Amino acid sequence: MSYLEFFGLISGVVAVVLSSIANIWSWPLGLVNVTLSFFLFFQVQLYPDMFLQVFFFVTNVMGWWRWTHPRPGEEDKHKFLKISFLPYRKLIIYSLLSITGMLIMASFAKNLHEWVPLIFTKPSASPYLDSFITVMSVMATFLMIQKRVECWIIWVLVDVVATYLYFVRDIKFYSLMYFAFCIIASFGFLHWWREYNSYATQNK
Image (cartoon, rainbow, N blue to C red):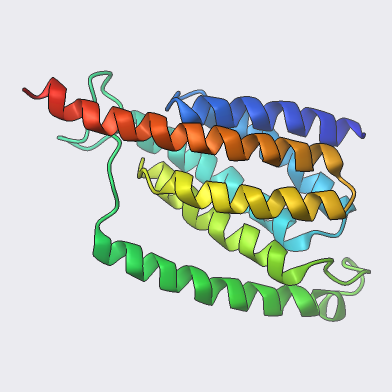
C-alpha cells in the first residue's frame, strides 16, 4: 500500500462521512483527497478516473461556496443550503445526458494511448467501467452541490462498480474504501431524506 493510497483512503472516507451528514467541512477535506487520487490513478492507468479528479477539485470549491451561500428562500435553520429532490423532468434529461457522456468518454479512453502515446504509454485498463464511474460521479457531484437527495442513489451505483474495478486493478485498499462508501452513501440517502422531511415539521 503506497502513501498515496493510504492518505487518499483516509481523507476520502472522512470527507464522504461528513458529506453524508451534510457537514460543510466535507468540501475542503475533499480537496485533499482528489489531489492524492489524481496521482494514484495516473500510476495505475485509470485515465478517466485521473481526469475526474480535476473535475472534483473544481466542484469541491464550487460546492463549498454553494452550500455556504444559498439564495433567498433556500436556507435551512443553519443558514446553509436546504436539501431538496430533483424535479422529474430534469431527472430524465440528466439520465440521458449521463448515458451519452459515458459512451463518449469510453470511446475517448479507448484511443487515448494512441492519440497521446508519450504520456499515456499503456491503453486504458477498463474504459467502459471507468467511464461509468467518471460520468456518473460527475452527475452525482453536480447534484450534491445542489443538495439533491438523488445524488446518493447515484453514489451507491458508482461505489459498487468502483469497488469491483479497483479490486481487479489491484488497488485493493481503494476497493475497500469504495465498499465502505456504499454503506456511507446508503446512510447519506436516509439522512438527507429525513432532513428533507423535517423541513415540513419545522414550518408548522
